[in-house]
Amino acid sequence: KSQGGSPPSFTPTSPPKTGVGGAAMNKLNPVDAFRAQVLLDEALKKLSFLVSISGSASVHRDELTQFMGDEISRIIQEQRDLEHEYEELVAERGRLKGLANKARAKEIQIRIGQCATALRESNKSLCRNLKENPDVKGNLQKMQTE
Figure 1 (tube, rainbow, N blue to C red):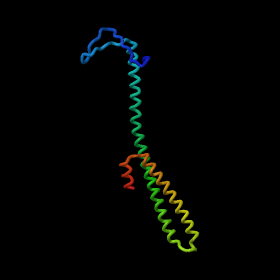
Figure 2 (cartoon, rainbow, N blue to C red):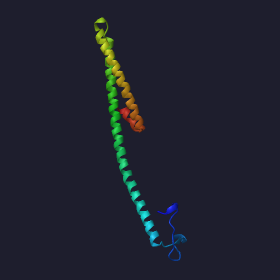
Figure 3 (cartoon, rainbow, N blue to C red):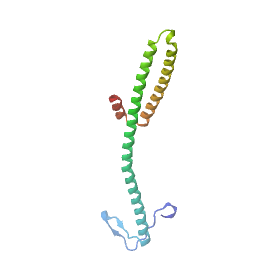
Figure 4 (spheres, rainbow, N blue to C red):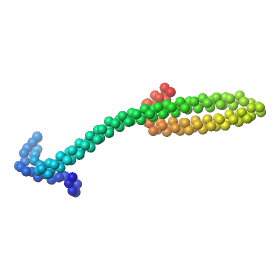
């Protein structure tokens, strides 16, 4: 690398020759040729590294997308189960009338509150996962099939 950010100087060792399109071609002195070779080697190493990580990034992205899809499916199922439990608890509370069932009605009311809290948390989790995995088409298909 040259000092001051300017490109290396080229010192012709023989009169200029013309190459493709009539452009002048100069031979590099051994030091400049070595510099150019080192720079090209470094560029090739960096390019090779970028190619290697771009391929693995694609694989990891697909794995992450699959994992997030599975997580979204799990949350949707959990939400369905909680909705079903909530529905059953509300129905049971409706059947409990009178003073004889007052203690049981209070217990059911507490369970309804717990179930409602769990539903809110599940909904927050689902929304967070959908925002983190913005595959709109895939998410829509998943929600329709679920």
